[in-house]
Length: 315
Ligand SMILES: Nc1ncnc2c1ncn2[C@@H]1O[C@H](COP(=O)(O)OP(=O)(O)OP(=O)(O)O)[C@@H](O)[C@H]1O
Image 1 (cartoon, rainbow, N blue to C red):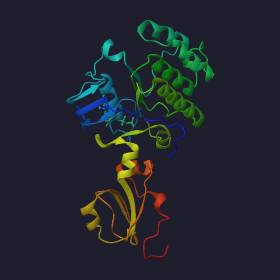
Image 2: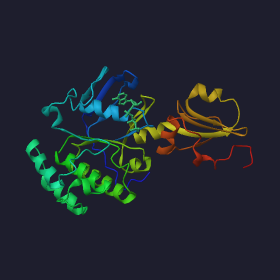
Image 3: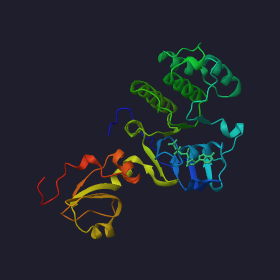
Image 4: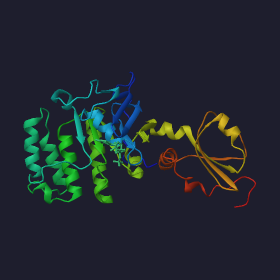
């Protein structure tokens, strides 16, 4: 895992404060359930990756956390308050929706001036410096900017609020690799400047990007939470086992099999370990974040482990 720009967790002797705590959070629509029984915690100061397949409930969760949607069950506490669309609650929350909603005819400067009227802790100066560094024109209608430039304007506005919690819904999906790199670098420098007082939840399908900057993971699939926790701990709890195609009963009794791929000659298992793996027929290997996510999404055997030979078998 690249640690190049990963934020250093803020050490604290005291009990960690949770920026987000939900319990059984549920959102049902007439046609179906968008989010079911979602119980998660995100400690303050983390940058959390929110991942899952299309339709898993990621946007729904973010909308519930901002108070834009109301739960049909369960509860959420965000920065110690119940999410609601009122200025006192929203003052500490920056939210960038999937489609980066901006007034197309207004310039970045116009947006920054409007923000200064509407927000009490507005830091327009830093936002302007950041946008100038990225060569984003401040005086042109945002409707004439590129997708990447608009995303940077959206992020600059969200950060200008000096939020304690930043919720970003797939902000880098449309960006080229360099623009993504700039966007993510802006996030990590904002996190460093905030010295542990900013928490970020970043929804994205680009696991490699998330792996570079995130230290916490929320994985949703089929409207439910599959995993929630520190990425390093989650990776350490899981292992890939490659072994002969035989009865996996003994493994199943000792561990949780998250995903299994079987061929006539070989079995590849992603397990959540219940203790040490003692069956010598299996080769064990650490799992990458991408393969962990794919395993919980029900994907086929991680191709990266095909090189592991099955004991007693020729490659
Ligand atoms: N306003 C709504 N009315 C009815 N159903 C909705 C509504 N909003 C979302 N849904 C449904 O809830 C489910 C979860 O949607 P959501 O947008 O939260 O998923 P997502 O994980 O963000 O997906 P994607 O990765 O495609 O953006 C989907 O089946 C979606 O069709």
